[in-house]
Image (cartoon, rainbow, N blue to C red; front, side, top):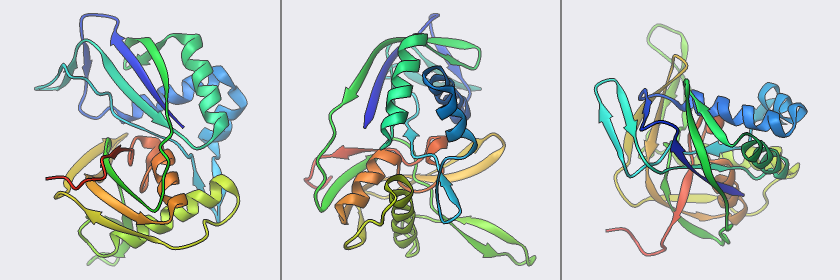
Length: 252
């Protein structure tokens, strides 16, 4: 399920640094705590496990505004601002909605955004193929040993052959963590519709590289759906991997 939250700055404009994902993630946990402190603590400290790996099972977009411009030290936004949050877990959606409506504003880096409207978006029906555009970059990584003999993380491009199978395995693990059972049936194939664009984001001092993409994914409808609801790739609860459905016809 997915929310669209419409906001406006309490003052004339909203001023943000270029990297503000961590502040949005903190706001989500704050909203959840207003709905249910026990669930918020569980999600923040533990999450949903599968084979020793914890998943938060939610994702969110950056703040989206038609009146947005870059300045020397960050971003300025004015007027209406939209924010999308998504999760396959009913308790997440319920507690988040209660918290947002109870508080009535989004606290963000010492500023306030007033909540104008909270809209539950209609759920797409997924078959064996869907076309998406990223709202936030998709992150896929693997480990490798460098020339110094140390193990480190390598972020993969969607044009590298390892990207698609690692993405599929990540979706399978999320599905099992969410529903307690395997996603049966075929796997997934991914086709890029445009050249992907790299984005490096600083998340509390950690540099994370993701990719903005237009793509078609075909195969297992259950995996496509969990990708839409919980996010594609890694670091979803840090604001990565959110997509929106695009028309079926190929992009120019």
